[in-house]
Image (tube, rainbow, N blue to C red; front, side):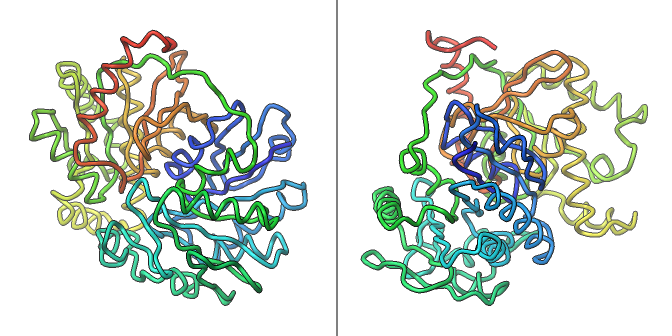
Length: 422
């Protein structure tokens, strides 16, 4: 039976958390149902369920997480970890409350910091670098802005369960959700040790930061296999409008990387890709991509948001329908390129884009292989008899030079003796 169940709210979050375990048995399952057969599989140590609750209503997110948590608790899963967004987007309060109530426990321990990505919690306030999260770029997110920086206030906006801050020298006393201050990797290890010593490893929450200390804490078996050999040519498929990702694409474009931007009609018009015009456009894009070592296909985020919104209103699409359609279009374009014979390593940015692509190729599980840089995960997918190396990341992760850094990593991979050809 599995030792750890992770409940994630989006796909890239499931990936960047799942890769922290790199055990001989870690599997990511797409969908909000907990499969009993997976719980009892002898070759699995860690199961990550992508519940896709990020964009649900608080009520629907509560019901989804409650159902999964209750099933896990009833099956005797010893540790349940609620993976939250490192910038505290999504339904934090309702999901933590659902897990606490479903497991019928007195305490849930929430460690939201991710020091390697400069995300800290001090006196209960969450920071991106030195900026409170609500004042950072995440406060201006067009789809899910973070309006509060105090973690207790974020929880209280969706929950009546009491929450408490545990400082550097504090400990959890009483009942409710306990929010831990942390600014360094040493803080994470210290908190982990204290929870182990107090027998409080049943209900935990946080992002990939605290997840990184769980393998040692839970005594999970490690996987020492190397990374596969990767095609040094890179195609970036961007469905994110996060300013951090847009800055990465801008930097690559300034360095000479060709960038294909989809128009509002190409992104939103139903059936456009199957039209003669759409098929011709994809064939033309493939030729552009093949002429370059690195290329970008972009949903146009930052440059034409006004035009996209106007076209969406013209065809009667709501904001949520627009978000879903853009992600679907990016996944559909990538599949069409693969159908035409595209061969290269693929970087997908944004959980919705990765999820849409997986749906188009008919795959509902994925195993993370390794972390190329913090928050940037390598996995493999099979499609039409071929294996493709996929790199995924959340829209808000990575340095501005990320695409150039990945290109260097891909070129290095083909000369390393320990790599395994795919």
